[in-house]
Amino acid sequence: MDNDLKQEQGAGLQEDCPIARSELCYWLSRKNGCDKCYIRTLKSVEMKEESRDRWAATLALLPNDVDDVHEAGECQFCKDEPRQADGYAMLEMAHAEPYFEKGMFFGFGKKVRTPVGSLLSLQFSCCARCRKVMRMVDVIQILSVLLGVVVATVLLMIPGFSQKMADLFVLLPVFFLLLMIAAGYFIGKFASAEYVKRRSKIVKLDVSEIPVIKKMLSRGWFFFQVSNNGLPRVSFAKRKAYDRLLRSRPAEREAEQPEGDLPLDNMNI
Image 1 (cartoon, one colour):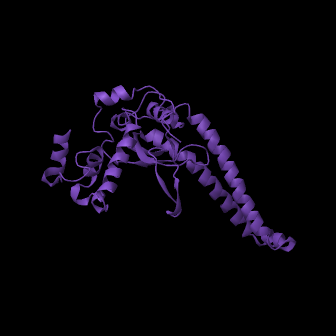
Image 2: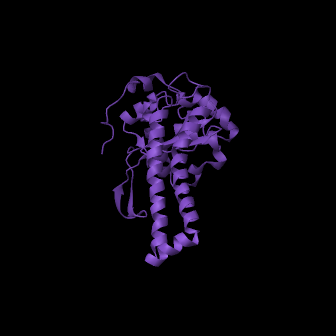
Image 3: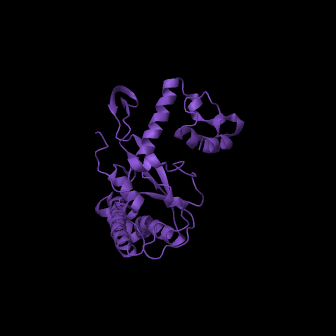
């Protein structure tokens, strides 16, 4: 692994750096190289070592097959026969470990533990059909609200309609607009839920059905952003955001962390 890392970084590898040849070094060098590594901006050796150790602790919380979900050429969301991947779905997951604290008020004041110690944006191979289905879950609700706004606006542009409302109460047209927006929201929420119910038969809209996600949830990870429909927020990209999170799967790592589900006793909260 070290030889591969040195080849990737070339002769510019700074051997005296506190994070040299560590997992954090591997992660950052693949993106920017030593010259643009943000670790160089940290003021002390202790801060650099802390960053190195925190990244190692984060990786230790991951299942060994976390990179399989984007290295596979098949979609990870298909419930039926997996289709050929046509891009990547991005999902943010967080963990309470490793322990981290900061000031209560914008980083100042009494230091308290933060609810998030680790935050990762994971990528999953995704086909065009599943991408379209997942996007439609949010689009349906947005379109429903917009439709409510358009209908209300058209009606209020009719002089006889809006004037009669204003004669009853000057702010009644505004209340009518808000009522139509609320109606569009709730109708969209219902329509979106029905769409999820139907499409869940062919697409893993509940991403916890993906084995790697299931393992991570059992190890204390949680979804960092959740939509109004209760599903985690997912974004999409045609290209990978990263190559690998883990350099390899050392035998000792597999022995320490079996691929089965682990209990939540590693959160230390």
